[in-house]
Length: 535
Image 1 (cartoon, helix red, strand yellow):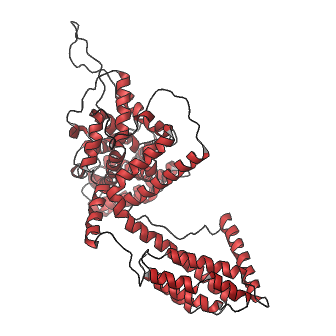
Image 2 (cartoon, rainbow, N blue to C red; image 1 turned 60 degrees about the vertical axis):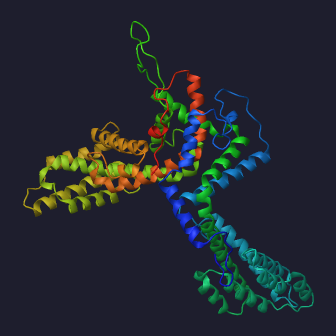
């Protein structure tokens, strides 16, 4: 929140910050840092001696070990690290992340309790000021809090204003004046409002102006001052976030990796679910592959899939993760809500595509070649299926409504262009097929899900996924824009996650493979071939 008469200090020019922010955003949203990618790739084949690339392997032992008893301080410190990691990650990957002023639901118990406590405080303040002679105990505490808030807004170099605030809001002097009933509360409030006007962001100028024009009731005035100060505190934090974002984007990988390592140092089981996730992927992929005849009978040698193949398939499993069945891997916890939203949106666009395929396969030629009508139909279906991820959403009822609406739209389109309307039997067939997509073994649903999975698998495995975003498999053309958008979001998360946690994944995979004793089917001699893509 830049001050009107004070400018925050900066360690670089605006041009440098702009270029840094641009390059950093590109790295977070679509590109993987070469050095970090090389670092994580090397960790698959190196001996793990690099301190920068490799996490502490003593915490990645897969055999059972006695549980460690954590102290309360260790638990609290790990909690703080986790909180810092989550906030830093949100700032890096979410350009729209900002702090909203505190607001509670209108009918919530918390709001009722808070409002009652505040009302009691303001009633006490008003009672004290109306006494004869007035009491200034609560008023002095208010002034002291306001002084600290104003000082917290200042940059380190704003010495002139800092001195002025401490001189005018000199609490020792104000207490002496209170003892002699000589406190000019109205004058102090006027100075506070003037100072707020110098410090606030331009968006708050109107709020400060209203304070200047407020009535002489000192309690109401202080209420207004604290309300605007709360807004200014949110502005100040958001200003700091905006300034911090380019720095975090430049150093985010190292910061997140180091912070997670700190958590791992204090909580050795912090990779339990991550290890289980990779292990189950490896077990599913493991198969008997004939590398070549080893004896006269031509028996083959059992091989393990390559490490990058394992990781790519593991990332694909994240897309369809069953959150009710098992917790998300620890390395993905900061992106859980983003992953859930991608999954919800993907389920909806898949359902829309399934319905459209059924319509065109059932009705056939008379409705082919009508792009504007097809888009209108897609929007209508999307609206009717909106919120299908909600637990109380009844998909069968929604599909019943979709079927009825579609029959009306199709009949209207057919009759307008001189075709006969759908027969009752054909309408019943269409309705039944649409309602049947709730069944997991429905052939249309299976086809769409398989091709969507193929689309995302190719994105993950391709070193330049931007090209693949525009190449959707056959049968998914109707939802191409939605798939491209969701694919870009998902691959951005995958790329960043791979760079941050690649060394941890490498250690886990190495230990799992060494434990199995089987050679890799595709040794990573050319890591760029199998690596997680970067835009």
